[in-house]
Length: 605
Image 1 (cartoon, one colour):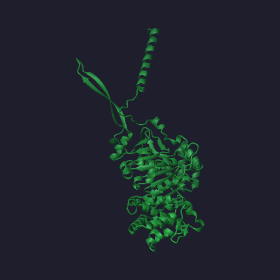
Image 2 (spheres, helix red, strand yellow):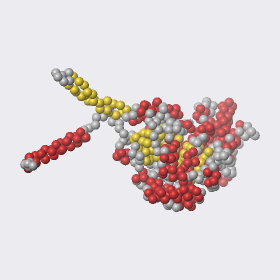
Image 3 (spheres, one colour):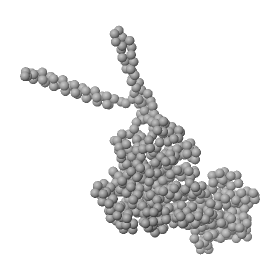
Image 4 (tube, helix red, strand yellow):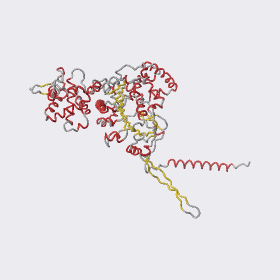
């Protein structure tokens, strides 16, 4: 075979290298070419972009920081990470046998301990690559999902198996308690279940007395009582010409009057109702008691003058340092009003308090098993499951609104900053898990506070069905939408909601190439025209047609994520957390009740 001269061979080699380099340069130039975004730049986040969104707290040390701050790191290690410590928790033998197998399997993988320990936050779903996404930021999360769309099994329960701080849960059917309370107790939390209409036999509740949160004998007492009065009065009654703001002030004074006049124990709202409806006294006599009653003992008779810089003088000219000046003056004001107006105010106050005379509610609000401050400042985190069944939502929603308002008013009163400017005035972060928030009615104080409570260690997970439901209660320009750091969208049947999501996702620019022909002498000439058009990243119709496994996750200032639902019963890790909590039933109620149901009884349910 004839050899090719070296010069020619080198020439061919150089030509080949030049061609390759030219090709690579052209490819690089095209790659670097600025993307046309004349009609919009919306696009889905890719894997590397999702990595930068801080939805993987178990890759960092946020969880450990939280535990150290709250003093619960050793407790959590003891309860969860030591593989045989669960035997000390007095769980039924059949549960323990099942755990033996589960723990051997998981510990051999040597990954479960790390994931269990470091995963902490609001579980918002999975990305299209199958990775868990967890929001541990200080920002709030909103979820928009229709009834039956999978929000409970994919976000609510998974969050309660993931969030390591304290929580207040709007537990509509009581299912969240049954599925997650025992697990949260097992990892060291105190758990409470409040069900205002529980009868103590078929259903059990802990106790919550709103009046026990009044800081009696301090500058805060009138404000604390006013918050209670304003919350329990129906919104339409606040606009009533006879009741209105004067009625709220009157009810505030009545609450304080009953609180001070009850010398043994702490008065409750049932006591307030009983005072206003006492048949042995006329309305005038009740007001006279408020005007001249001895609200304080001789030992503390200088207290009111110290707080209010005010002293009541009775009709006979004597000063009365034991009479509460605020209560006395408000009582005198109502007594001096025309009979019709006075009667309207007192009658409406009785009507608004009637619900607290219902035996089940009176019993469950007679006293408190906890203080609101325990949620963020007790030795260990605390979880309160607030049951609000649909058949009694008019009654229970008032108490939930009251509890929310008292939390905001009580726990945002103090801020202590460290050198980095972080608030360290609390031990545990608090999650408001508020399913169907609009269903309980407007909570004005919470609505206003949503913009600043994150600075006090509070985080909200708000769940609504659609935009219409939210706007009907909170109006078109409500504060919730603008204060969410992360929003989760599932498929929706509501046209307005689908349009809203379409707008939030934005528009993208698409390149269109059209081919045209022109006559030629022999052949037709072909020409190509390039143009750019805009279209939504997802149209309302496409959002409506999302499958039951798809979601959209939108973090503020980030590209949207194509998400997947993570149903707990399809996940080994969550199934194991559920298994750890199966021993706790409704009859076990709360941490104030120490008995466990027998495992044999549970198997028959």
